Amino acid sequence: MTSFRIEHLPFNKATLRDWALPDGRHSNWPVVYAINGRNQVYIGETLNAVVRMRQHLDSPSKQQEKLGAVRIIVDDTFNKSACLDLESYLIRLFAGDGRFRVLNRNEGITDADYFDRARYRATFTEIFEQLRAQGLFARSLPEIENSDLFKLSPYKALNQDQAVAIEDILEGLFADVERGEGSTIVVQGDPGTGKTVVGIFLMKLLRDIQMSTPSHKSDADSLFSEFFVEGFPELLRDFRMGLVVPQQSLRASIKDVFRRTPGLHPSMVLTPFEVGKSVERFDLLIVDESHRLTQRANQSAGTLNRAFTDITRSLFGADDLSRTQLDWVRAQSAHQIFLLDAAQSVRPADLPAQVLRELVDEARKTRRHYPLLSQMRVLAGGDYISYVRDVLSGEAASVLAFPTYDLRFFDDLSEMATAIRDRDQEVGLARMVSGYAWDWKSRKDSAAFDIELDGIRLRWNRMQVDWINSPGAIDEVGSIHTVQGYDLNYAGVIIGRDLRFDRHRGHLRVDRASYFDKKGKENNPARGLIYTDDDLLRFVTNIYGVLLTRGMRGTYVYVCDPDLREYLRQFFGSNPTPAL
Image 1: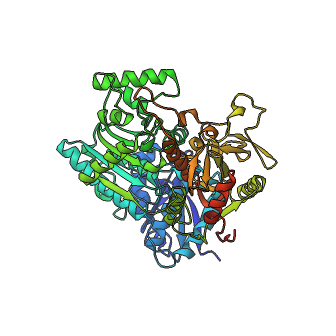
Image 2: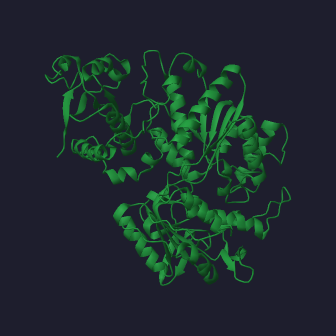
Image 3: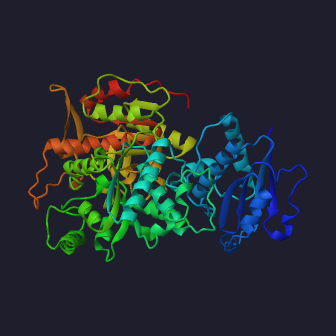
């Protein structure tokens, strides 16, 4: 039986005097509230709803947004911790739903444990459903949680690694800005540790600090309230920031998030070429997926080859072939934050491993290196990420089991495709993915099929941008470039014949003829670089390492090469299947 009630009241001074209830629940009791207008919503918590509403009504920003209604959530069992938790829960859901623009500042979403939290959390779901029935949410809870708006929201609840890293980054950044010194920061972590979350969160947090005024009272319970006081906003006056995202699909998704977030704008999400061409320098550039910045190599279009030359000449006075997009970022900004994982480099044009090592070493020497260790994506935890990488590098010493993770091995591709469709029907966001081990025939002939195995015919992804959420994606196979940086609930990974196993030597090898990504194996004649099979093996195993770590709830595996199938079966084929 629910103990909460949601009171729907007008948001104006005329009715404020009638709000105080005899039992004191509006003036001396912890509550959560949502104030909304036609397109905006603000969520808060307070011990005195009457006083807090009066403060909001006196706020010019709230008046400008024309917020006309308030819903106060009252529960006889509420305490401060439960209210903070519900507040952060609703902020995340409103941001992920997209029905309203969330007006809250990003001071740090609370994610602390407290007594009987599981029981309160069950109530939160009921509160969401009532608010949805009243028209405040457009989508169901699973639809919201599967959306990019939710996954890439700046209103995420940070884990301890992320919170510590962001606080340290802010302290160092403000100190450097005050001294007039530049800085280079590296945030490093495995897949699923939330590097992209840190980048987006920082952009919103810094913008909120920048736009803060003395009239904005910061909540003392927020993680970063210390930066919303006099002195910090002044340091960010006229501070020019940008988020650099090398990958086209992820960049488009983040632009959509910025479009819906007050204080942010899609123009703040940049390509490396836009950074290089910028007439004005940036004060701060945050680079997501920094390992996907490129060195001088043959670009995907002739115009980009010319642009690479022109930018390098403009910034450095000559067409220096050793210059990379990393050099562009550093030349065009006073401060840089690089988010990276060197094991996710998937093409020869990506920054060389040595360059990434030097960048990390530099950050360590200046104490500006922040590792993220906590696994936020895969339910199997960080051990699964390490396990996958050890298996693909031939360094797995033993077979591990992951009882809470749905890891399955298939000998029939049609059976795996059926299982993925079943998971998609159940929870959504289940997709088939693969390395580029088949020619992309359907790109030129829409009637053609690209992958034909075990009586099933499949096509590569038709969409280059936001393929995961596109109509028909469940019937297609996504490449590395459509899923890197994204989460899936379930990933059905087809390991093609580009990766094989040499039974006689006992190690993995690459089959160059079965790898169809021309840019993925192209030599670099301009710099005299020739990529050997060992080099190509590193890129191909990195690709499969990324694909095998996309699934939050589970990963299904099908292997084409018979010898590789038997080798990988021992590692991926004996995991206990959890109850769905």
